[in-house]
Amino acid sequence: MDLLEYQGKQHFASFGIPVSDGRAVRTVDEALAAAEEVGYPVVVKAQVHVGGRGKA
Image (cartoon, rainbow, N blue to C red):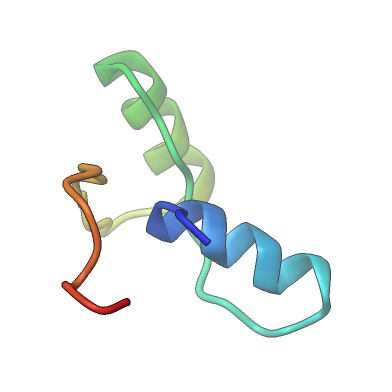
């Protein structure tokens, strides 16, 4: 499976597995809106697809 972290979390959540709250956003405006929705303080984490961990 080739997923970004946020996609994996969505997949886990769809099966009822507890995951931390978060939002995937693409713009500053989306990030600000998500921060207001989630509540401060927030952590911003980049999701960059650069390949796996070198495992088969």
